[in-house]
Image (cartoon, rainbow, N blue to C red):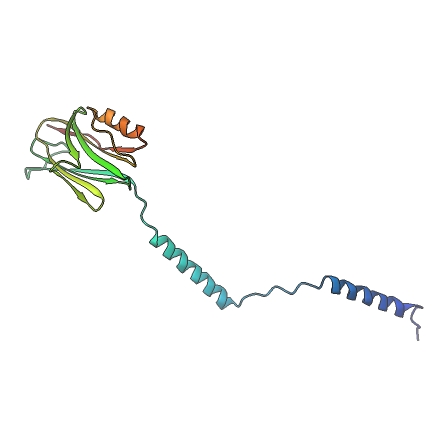
Length: 181
């Protein structure tokens, strides 16, 4: 039989003693604990429900908008043009601004409608609606002006009014022209 090398016992005890001292100073980290799979799925589902509620409850983003529609006076169909006697229905959304106006110009220089203030205008759920009968030939354009400061009175043309609103930090939306024959 073989005899162990001389001093082996001291070497083993010395090594055990060193490991024991290191463990007392810096104990080994506990193994990471994992949640059971059912809890992981439950937490993920709860997160999705909370995210959906937050997204769905967020108020819709308010933006400046202007919609117009030509309503024919006669029942006959025709192309995209309008004729004297047709009506122009307008709806302007001020996009959350404190001050807003809807204005309609004929020839971009003759102001034919200013809302609010005209009997053909009405407020509806934060929007401005107007119904304008097209009584003269020409090109009609509408614009909605919106600003947090009071708007300047009309300056004589669509372009001048749009510039004045922008100078106040306001926003402007201009409709396509409606040509009346």
